[in-house]
Each structure stands twice: as C-alpha cells, then as structure tokens.
Image (tube, rainbow, N blue to C red; front, side, top):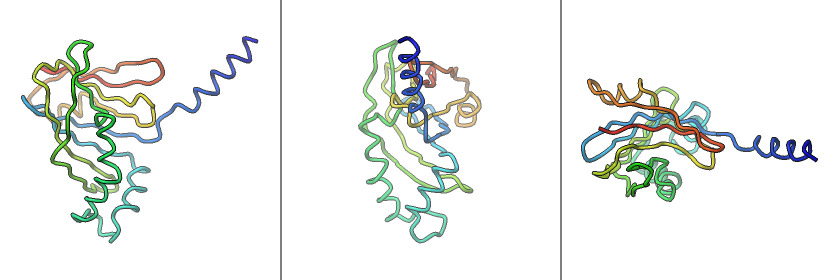
Length: 168
C-alpha cells in the first residue's frame, strides 16, 4: 500500500513544475518598486510570434494594448506574482501602472511599476501554482539599484519556491 501511495504522490508531483521562467530586476524606490521581467527564450519566441503581428521586432501601441488585455491585465488577480509583507502579514499589492513591453534580442521584456506599501518589510516573488518560476538574484537587484544593497534569498514553500527581497 505504501508503494502505491508513494507512486501516486510522486506522479502527481511531476505535474507541478514551471513552464515559464522570468528573471526579475526590481528597482526599489521609497514609494514604488519598478519591475523589469525578462522572459525565457522559448516563452518569448511564442509571445513575440503571437503579438508582434507586423514582425518588426517591436510592439506598436496597438500590439501593446492587445498584450495588456490578453496577458498583463489577468496578472492583477495574482498580484503580479509580487507580494508585499510586513513580517508574515501580506499587504495589498494594488494596481500596476506604466506598463511597457519590448523585445531585447530574442527576449520579451515587461516593465511596470507597483506602489510600495509604506509598512512593507519584504517583497516576495512566487507562483503558488508553480507554473512560472520567478528568479531574483542579488546581481539582478544590484543592476537595477546601483550603489545600493538589498538582501535577497530563496524561500522554499511546500511544493514551490520563491524569492524574498528585504526592503530597507
């Protein structure tokens, strides 16, 4: 019986893995956090083929509008996979603004800004469904915030992981 249960649990865990990989470059301000998401090449290629309809390697305002309505707007219901915390209390993420989409080389890049709650001590990046892996490294944070230091560490949850950025 233990073998059957073990096989069942193992088989189910095979389905919980990311399909999209995003490198996150968070620029931390006193009242905002500006995010630059760089998508993996496979996801980028698929989305660029679908949304750069004139194939000029750039998104026109009309193409960007479609990207917002088809993809970015739905991220609101997931707090843009960017969660502010005071201790273990989750704070409101709010609405994103200043959305931009661009193509750099062969990769899709989203940029947007979130209001940073004044009491936020950390910001965490994760997807509880484990369909998207968000990677935040000290190098990414340093690039986005030259001359400043922010501690970044990986946090493992039950069946997915995320990154925590400590705010000053």
